[in-house]
Length: 137
Image (cartoon, rainbow, N blue to C red; front, side, top):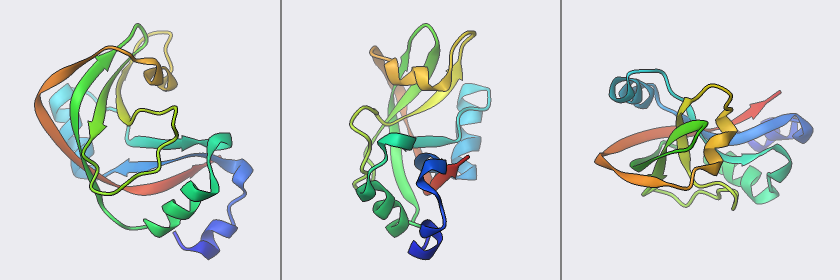
């Protein structure tokens, strides 16, 4: 995204910043887990987004970011895989542990995956990739 394009976005309309998974990564997760999963990794949510994060998103436009999933975690409302080994430094919000929500259980919401505290190592690393994106209302 170019700076001119960014200036046209009202910050109050920004839902979140993230990394949208590549089609191959989405397909890979669906094959492994037997269902469609979330299509992105959240970097920061609306009101918590900093100027630094917005500038970083603009600078990373159309750059493929690679990373791996090495752990899986679960709570009563969600299941998620947790990510590591990003090939660039990503300015994640301090309250977010990088992850992809795999399942939302009855009564849960995707944001509940931020509350997962118990993790176990995956049998095999999952190599993934994606590009930055700004989601708006």
